[in-house]
Image 1 (cartoon, rainbow, N blue to C red):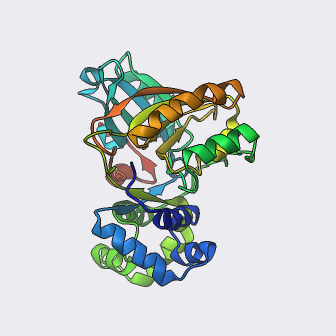
Image 2: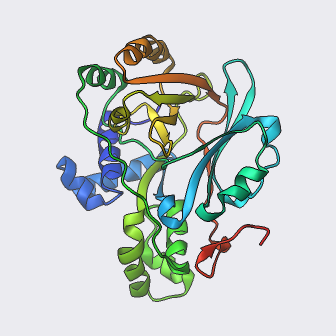
Length: 316
């Protein structure tokens, strides 16, 4: 279960909605910037951290979901391109591991040739954190009423970046609110130069992400699920729920993987509603297992593999 109060969720939803821009988030929900910063401070005191998630396809990297029994995933290729990983126990007790590679788009054949033979793979459109505006029951009610809009995934094409742009992205992956002057000092360049790169090249590529460990991890860890979208527009609702930590939609837009963070007493409610959601032609959900750790592991962008304006493989 996520550790946020309703007022804190409102602030976090506004920050995610506005890509972490505090001024815009404050205006969006009608509060002061000082109030937003106070909420951030209090959440940090609880161990909650804030990060930037780049839109990887704009960097020339394709997100690829990979899942297999843990014994087959012990030795994976090209590990520096693994952006996310997590350990799951399936409902029949099989230890599983999933990873998300963000792999050079022009070299995907190398990845597929070296993965475990029995691995499940899926190219992703993106992976993102929903804005926690609504609870599960509201999601169901709006879905059954058809009260949702059209989801049109934006075309994500590669943009040309340099080494400094990628350095800024990696630093903000570690701490979204890291001051640009500190990044400039560590890099050994003028702050105005770095600020220019951030404003012109980097800012629009970043999304705001909150990382936390669920409250009742020892008694009921997060669930891992596969969702088949019978109506792909339902994804517009999934992007606004508070019971999903991370959404991983396929490049075709017809299914997605999800990390569900729900209190134990609500799991049966979800299971009971699945038949209604399926019968109305909205979605089908398959619960794949429980997380052994409270949150997937995120790794920074491997900027050392970006050479001469292209991504190279570790063996090159």
